[in-house]
Length: 625
Image (cartoon, rainbow, N blue to C red):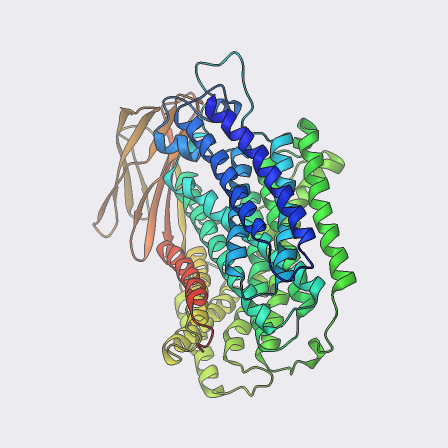
């Protein structure tokens, strides 16, 4: 109870600190030196939010069920690790985590931007404080994590079992750093627009924040994808689920923004597009967080269940969007140079083409995500937009996108001649030959898959050549592009050659397919601290004589009373063998799904390489090539 009281009043003091920062920033705007009091109160703001967050963590650790958030999301039988991760495994706690990262980022920004103009730093701080104050009011007024319950319950309702996983415990904080990083980009761009200081040096300064944000957002998406793969029993890395999509959309705009800033570092063009992409990235990050945490994606009537919270979200979000649009139209001075100054064969043009593709992919994902919401609001008709929708609209454009990405990085700035034409042609012919050879005995559609696989191999071969021939020149870019080429190639091969069989078995029975035999040996039951584990012991006798043992698991949790499936996955260099089982209701049979998923480890490794490229780009010196 004491920790909740401390946490609540720390939030109030944090809000007071933010208001004081806002006041001092305004009166200090015309001065030549940044007022030291602003640094002090920025520290106090961060300090109070840290105290508030730690208070909530302690409430979860000690199972303080007088706290409504703890009561709704914890239980005394939960392991300590999941009590702590339960802090941000809910709407109220996750918003407090968001606020913690917001205040941390602006604190770091003030100390790391000494080489920037004082007015630029003050304006960035002012815009960031608007967001921070808005979140303080939102948390205290509608999403207070320290609400008191009386009489005090003896036991809590527990955390959703599928959230009780080590990887998911670190996935939200990392993803939130990516989301919140977009707020600093947003505030910085608005400040630079008002002051008309968008320049090459400013682009280099902004690029660091973009790289940090892009790194954490990519890493957060990776962890979420791996968690969903083994925890939800889907048997894949991406299913175009709306919750997945809301993290992908800001990643697409952020990727486009990163490439545009690279152009802006070379010459003053694409300034308007940089501003627009910055606003879009922050808006999509905000929308994504609120859509997931407000439950809109699960039920479009969430606002009706909590109209105060929904109304605040809409007003706050639209106010920020309106403010940014107003600043863009009234303060942004379009540079004389524009897109028409690009030579048709140059690196700038290739980056612009890259942006067009990114915006198209974003449009497809955005429509597929929000269309079902609007349809249900308007007509009360529920539909789900699944993978076929995305595949039909994205796959035809993937072929030219990959070709453009293979050629673009090898072009020169301003004006270029297509050098090494013979090598480019030979690599393309080799790609077609390799793809045709691989697909010759495949049951898939030969023509479309040959085009896709050829373009993927083409990008892969070009990326390998650039990685080894250019050595340390643009090393961060080359390793990121190589990682992306490996990602696309692995995804296509995974999609083409994955196999799946689904069948029902009961104990001591067997199932045969394609010369393989699956034997259901026995059921093993174990009692754990907060769940009962039912383990299926399976043996697979492969046609080549190899024997695999699988032990998929069902977990029956005590609080809340939920049954989850835990897949058993055998990972090798070339493929994953994946088995999951579910109990058939009112029968002795178990429904078993067995999949062979090629190149899964390559998919995860390729994203790590992409993130490594961003990390190297962040730490490399400005004078390096």
